Image (cartoon, rainbow, N blue to C red; front, side):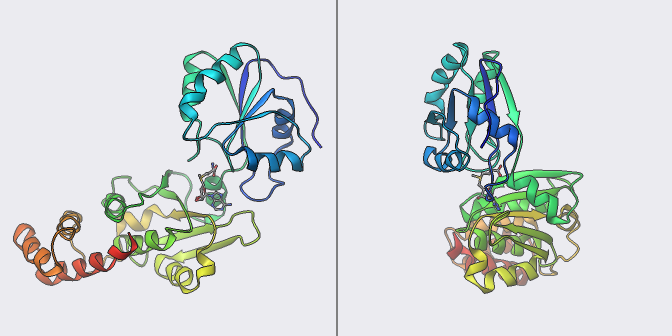
Length: 298
Ligand code: SAM
């Protein structure tokens, strides 16, 4: 049970909710949710369950990716007439790979007050247990769904575009194997990695070690591929590339092969790539075979 409090009027509260364990919500968050005039929720049915658990009754309206822009004027009108509002997403902190950014930007443009009510976020929870440097990190959200775009992004990390900071990704059950396969190919077997699965839930699991070892475990049993994932990559290994395969080709040659393989056979692509890049045929052939065998994961 949470108690109502007197809130300053005309304020939008951005309220973090649990990422799994329903107890991971602050008493301040519960007081705010009990006291606002309306709660804007990404999925009203899901939030209804949370509110029910804490006996909170508040009118709800939906605000998700598909209606966010249309909702902005209504939200501004409600705030300007003195209502207090809360924004919640399905899980964790709103706006972190979740809707709300356009709305919050519009509220600032109208000089309306926005107040954070901090709490759970999968990103920070994963970093807190990863055992990988957190002094500098970059949150990269979800990797692209398409194979070539994903490989191109990973090649950019490898070529050091982000320096030596830790990288954090969100990943879903559908793409965990494809993403790890690409990471293995591009960043190498010795890349230091931690994967946090199902944080705060019954099957919470941490996979810590080299990319090769973690991939071996996760790919060995479909149960390891179920649920929600945060992938944390150490910046040191992908920049120093200490374990670079001696058959490795340059980032540019790899990009070229990826493009050629969308139109040509492995043999044709390699023959053309040898002429364009001047790299050894054997190296290009080995890389082309790997890229080609990964097409099935797209
Ligand atoms: N706003 C959320 C936050 O603050 O973490 C993130 C929402 S995003 C749409 C959902 C993704 O977050 C999932 O696909 C997964 O990568 C990650 N995630 C959310 N809950 C998680 C959990 N309990 N364990 C691991 N990852 C989780």
